[in-house]
Length: 169
Image 1 (cartoon, one colour):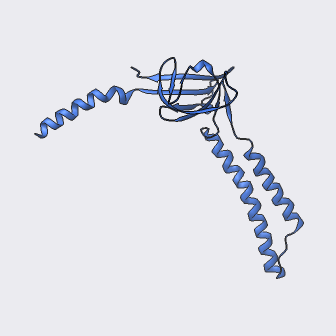
Image 2 (tube, rainbow, N blue to C red):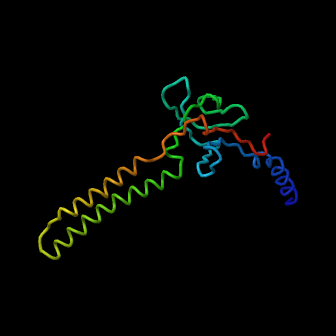
Image 3 (tube, rainbow, N blue to C red):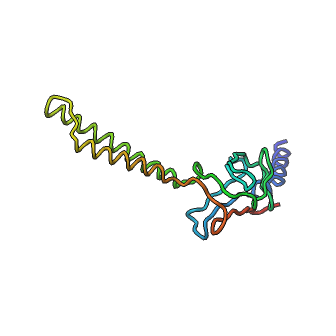
């Protein structure tokens, strides 16, 4: 009886291998630079803008065909996409966020250290003018860095959107 179950399991695995091996994704890349490569796979949410509309639409990718993208609410031709919102997708944005939080955290720590030192040395709470200026510069640096995030990937020129189907059907 166990041999029958193993035989059945073997055939189920064999018939499901093409689905497991095939991989479909949308590739966004600027020129030949692999550092700017972003991929969107089936099941992921994509925020895009097409030429017909002046606003962004968010939808979930259901299937990817060689000439079209099937979304949960729409069917889209890749040539119609003018821009993709990559604010949440780009890994470089997390690095920029971390650097901006360092600026904010540095300003808070600098002010706290000056306040604690004034309490310890002078027995009263005070913050020096230099500490306020320095912590303001650190906070402003964090704010400026937070505004440098990569927001949009505009299709055209060196920026390409490609549909990649590996081991496809």
